Length: 365
Image (cartoon, rainbow, N blue to C red; front, side, top):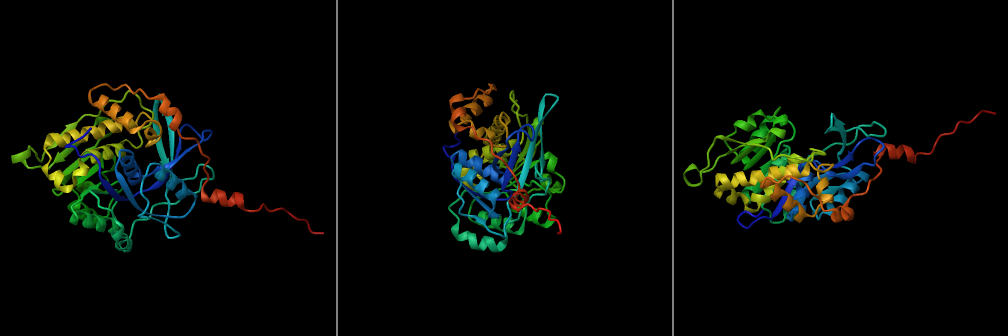
């Protein structure tokens, strides 16, 4: 899937890096414990595709972060820009997968499936962290962020100054002033139609070079502000149908794979490369992202396919999908070797309770 012979690079990113607790059917099944969150998924998927990935996150030093770390290390993600201390927090997200009228559906929760306690949430990178971490940055072509904060926007400013492509994917409502700054800095903005609330100004912004609005099974639309005279770029919206999926086990993470596919195709060219792209090249990159999203739906968990297919197998499946051959035939020898084992899960409160000595009643004599 090469585009101009440049398909790999380095990416730094900040945003939601969490522990995903994926429960395939019910509490009787062992959950899958993996790194998740939009930023976590996108950067890990890119590492799987051959990129050098550097998440920037403030995690706590606890059992959840150890599970996240183990998964990231498995895929070669660099942790030099991640801190682990009592000032950080490791978000935990429980994903339940259920079957409704023969169609798999998923829901997310922040409650422990064992005791019902609300589990930790995200802490944004701070400006002071940016100043400390900047000297450690590698040479990178892409900066990705999935929510606004002063620290994240400051990183976007630095990235743009250094010629990196800035990719913004707001996954939650944004503070208006920070959102406006982010839109002025971002080269590419991708937004799901079900997350428009709080981000309504995105679709009308004149600043990003490329804006993508995903629309679930209906496909997506994009607007490319290219040079109409030289490259055929226009400022109108272009509709693209979804790549059909014949195997649907879980659609969670499909959008993250679409993002990873787009970055994989055009991110290695950096900001200057985006300026030189034609409308057809942009369309090709977006289509690859859509095909990766369809492939991901054939597995349980946002990145389930990574544990069952080698990257070369993914590329074969994506090319087949792009050619209209949408049967998902898995390599069973790879499945047997790489399928993840189930893990028990309990939140920190559960573990504290189980470690506490049991009280015994005593009678007065």
